[in-house]
Length: 106
Image (cartoon, rainbow, N blue to C red):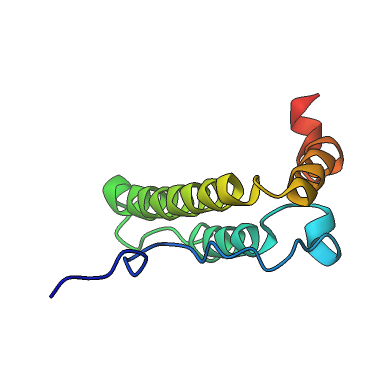
């Protein structure tokens, strides 16, 4: 069976359904990804492994790092597609200058 072009597996819905700039989107372009990553770190980090093993302690960090990398790549893919929209480019520039992490660039 041949899969028709455009019906392949992908990590993201790349359909532009409009640019949201209110709510949490006024501080960051990807609030859902940020919230998911933060919650996973906060859930996993406070607990030390019962066996005290360094390898057991490091495993959640490595796994969470991998999950964070997937979401970073997904966000970059979405941004690359959305950057064709002039409204998104304007919004992206606003977030770069005034967003939650804009202080990191200063």
